[in-house]
Amino acid sequence: MAQETLTDNSITVQCRPYIFEPDANAIFTSVLPLFVLAVMQETFTENQASEQAARVMAMQSANDNAKKLLDQLQLEYNKLRQQAITSELLDILGGQVK
Image 1 (tube, one colour):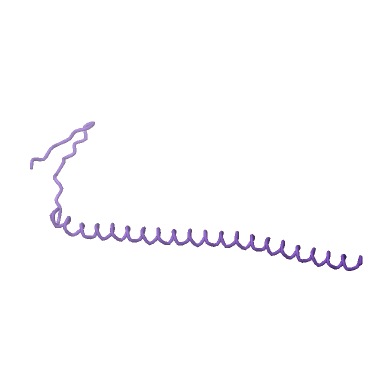
Image 2 (spheres, helix red, strand yellow):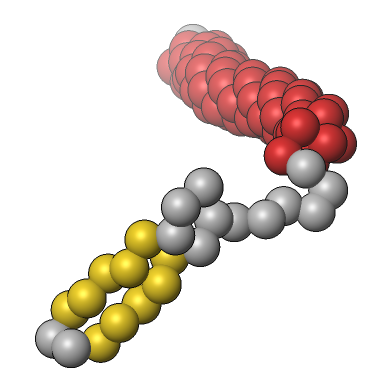
């Protein structure tokens, strides 16, 4: 290859072709498997993170639903208890009147 000379503001720079040691093909064949391995590892890591996030969301949803159910059951229990107390008071008052 011929060397080219670039001049810019009276500064002369000689452009030389790059010399790869080992050659570019050897570098490519050694770097490609590492690149594929890194991409696969990233994919598996993202998959595991996604699965974990889905599990966390499912558990959060189940926790929220359990809290709602607990509140509903507590309200139902309080209503039944109040009804029983009112019924007993009415029975007591009804018995005193006689």
